[in-house]
Length: 208
Image (tube, rainbow, N blue to C red; front, side, top):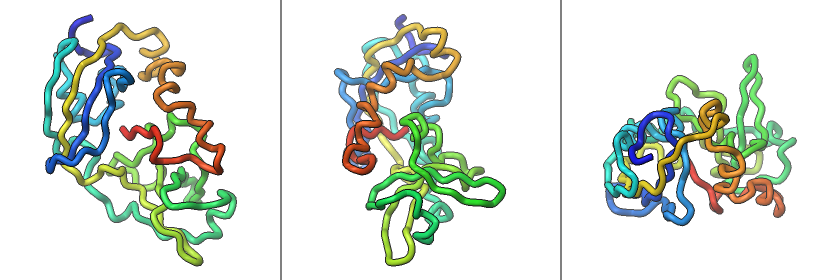
């Protein structure tokens, strides 16, 4: 396949930068990011820019924050009593927690799979409850957690190379995600990161 269109499996290499030129993330062509186009699994501005791109094409695109990870929301910064997190165990700065709200009862837990990091990011302005929260500060009796995406509020530049365009499998079309054996490889065996007592949010982590 030669052109990016809906229901194609696309592999891209990219450099993600702030408009100042500061590099936020790099994904090389040797280990590209793979997604199924047309399923809203990447930020809207980038998915729109990918339409019609050809195999091997390189391009740069500036994406405003409202078409990327949204504005920074102060209501997603929460002061949580430590007793509410007692079932989590040891806490550390940068730790990622999944918050669930059921009948006004709030509960924090560790995400079960790498998929939840993609599925549960707080990118929807209408959803200010469930999602992934990062521990920012630890105090004597409380913990400050932030549910904003790390790139929220930032206007971004993507330098992109289209590495591959393929026909997705039946299961990929059904789920909207690359098959798990390939997808899990991108996350570098997520479960292995618990060996030292928790997931290292700065190692092999790709935010979408």
